[in-house]
Image (tube, rainbow, N blue to C red; front, side, top):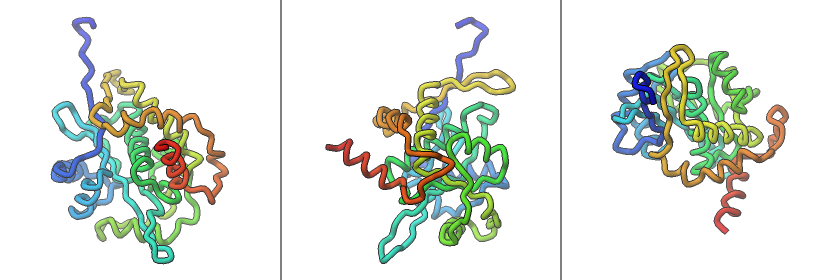
Length: 254
C-alpha cells in the first residue's frame, strides 16, 4: 500500500449482547430520526436479551448503525404463533453515504431471524420514503396490500403512544419467494468486505468475524441464495417462511 493511502477502517456486524442495553439505548437517543418510533426501555431490553438487535460497531465498540426485529405473536386456536417479524428501527449514523450499508443491515436481520425464530407467514416492514422503498424492492420486498388489523395493532403496542403515526399504506413484506434474493445480497456483503463512499471515495471494511452464527451457517445461506421459491411478484400466499426453515432444519440435522 502506498504511503499516502490510508488503511480502511474496519467495522463489525453482530448481534448486540444483553449487557449492552444502555449502549443501544444511548445510540437511539443520540441519533433520533422522524421515521424511527421511540421504544421504551423494557421493550428494548427484551429485544437485546433475545438477540434481535443487529449493530455495526467500530473497532473500539462504538455503534454506528442498529436495527431491531420485532416479533408479532398472534393467538390462534389457543396457540401463540409468531405470525410476522417486523424489521424496524433501522438507523445508520456515521456510515451514511457508504453504498451497501442498508443492504447489510436488512439482510443480516432477515437471515438471523430465519435461522433462529422465523415468522410463520412473512417478514414485514414500514417504509415511508421512496428511496428506501426502491432499495427494498431490489432486495426482494414488495408492497403489502390489505394490512391485517392484528399486525397494525401488535406493531403499535411496541411503540410509545405519543409516537404513533398512521402509516398503514407504507407496509412492505418479504415472503419465501424473496428469501433467495435476500440471501444473495447477504452473501455478497460477506464476500465483498470493502464499501466505498459514493461522494468522497473513502473505503471502509465490513467484517462478520464477531458474529459466529453467520460464519457457521454461511454455506447454508449460500445454498438458499441458489434456490428458486417462485415469483416475487406473484407469491403463493399459502407458503410460509417458517415451514421452509423447518424443512431445511430436518435435512440439515439428519
